[in-house]
Length: 158
Image (cartoon, rainbow, N blue to C red):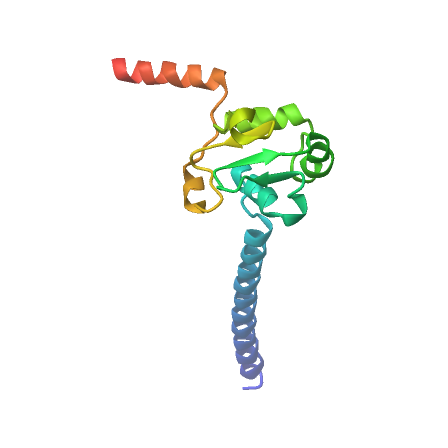
């Protein structure tokens, strides 16, 4: 009988230990998945970053919405390049920023219309209509367009 007690204690101790160990693993996995989801946020899109820049009151002398909210103007190229571009983008060359605007479908507004040298608009990028931004997309580069046209042609012919 003295030999049975330690065995019973040992087996129940093992079950308890196993149960606690499993619970700890589940809790640890939950904590890891929670922390991973926080640390792996989705990167902001170019329009989201641009909206953040335009929403910052400190940048109004450098870049701002025009009063109607349908286009924005860059008032000071050098300040824009030295203060804003390095903070938000890897490339700090003004021309690269303009190319990026073009790839996202932004159009330059004539100075005679806006009163500013560097003014840009997009029908889906408006200050007071944030729901339209979901329609913005980045145009792919020419090589991938050609590849997608070829694959579309091949599937249509088959």
